[in-house]
Length: 191
Image 1 (cartoon, rainbow, N blue to C red):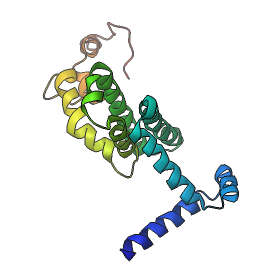
Image 2: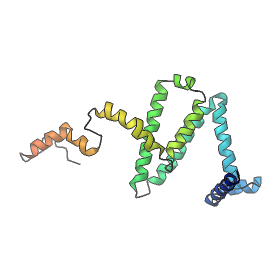
Image 3: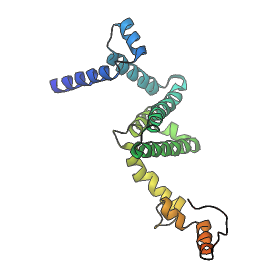
């Protein structure tokens, strides 16, 4: 048990270090006489508790807010990085978020059948939004990818990449045929 306690204290110290430049939390820390990590962990717990209890239907808006704010923040940071890995992870998240929103909209009964739906959705969205968990990639390769391959792309050999999609594009076929004669038939430039 002491290993858990020391590990938890180390995590709290790491949170304090990461939030040391946050002015709002510094003011709260001075007013409440609590470390920033306690404020953040306590606030997160209270937030999740409100979603869990779902008083007055507040769970839905709070769940969607958590599923939007964290990934939006990470997306804004990813736009400034040269690495495509974070872009891919967040694009995968937004695809899953949209997919979940459409399913939720068209089958509203899911909200009433699954107990504590908004709480579970919030935990799920946080799991798939954080790059450290790899949740978005796992869900996409397990569920969304196979569905899109089957129903959107429709061919077993076509996996949805730009290169294979271009091979099956009618415009590309017409342009390739007309290039052999020296001019393009469609007038569209190749990308």
